Length: 437
Image (cartoon, rainbow, N blue to C red; front, side, top):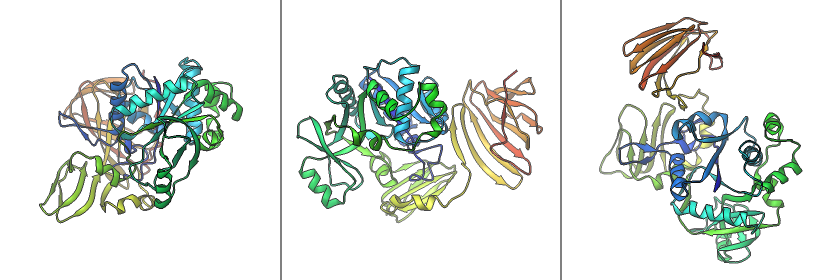
């Protein structure tokens, strides 16, 4: 099975745990036996491997999410990188071109496309496998997965199948309705549109060549920023006559808001948190190193991270986005392919950051034109390289880095360092990458 996971998101609806780099699929909320937590993307990736150990999985995402994906899934994960965001049609064309022109996947092979962040049970991906088989057999040019509705939702679009059979042709699509109209659709056998579909690779590439002017993957990538921002639904689905749908009646939830996310949390608290006996239906996720105390709260969510603190009624939490868009601050926490960083203090002429480097990883070799830095090694062992000179470092060592020197830090064991940036004009863009001597 060839499966593409679409990983996007602006990081606004689950603030403060999400941001432009760390979207909702990367928040660790699912407890493991060893006491750690995994994210939605880690859970989905694990479920795919359980359903089909030989599945060929490719993640289509933007540049900003690559480091986090490699941090959570490992360096071996296959990623199709969008040079910029252009909506789902360009993203699906790009990953389809990547599969064919770069990886050599045949035009007759079927590909399933799924969101990276649904909350589903394992048999969902067995159904996705079935969807690819139907597409490969030529049942229709496009095969969709329709979810059996459990209530008249106003959040989802609806698929109107021609019959109530497990596999049916599609009669029409309906936009997100009000509750009364949704109930009428359900009475007619309508299904929620899950955003999951399958196609033969040649079909999408032929459609893309008809609508876009490109020669292959490299040409498409080079001119990607010039493509129109348009969804796959508008560009392809609404114009296609040969569409089938597979019914799926298992558990499926779109965890797009704090309200829906807390519905599937197995614990009421993650991190340092205490709820008094009068709290009811309260969930706390605390990523700070300070305790959170909740007293007398009802139907509330509390989330704390280096980005900020949210205290909200669960119902009201669905309307968070316009308020978060008013905040203008740099990202304070991010996972990278080499580890993670957290900003812990900001002054006019200094910035203090806690850096955690995973064993065997290193920062890019780089220099700064407008700032000096001081590193203090807090824990672990590693190696620092400054202007080509190498030196072993361990806990307690202090490294001064004058403005303009080239430098990097490599971890032998997991290494924690405090980095203090010093200068009158500290900018994220002040980073000049170089080749390591």
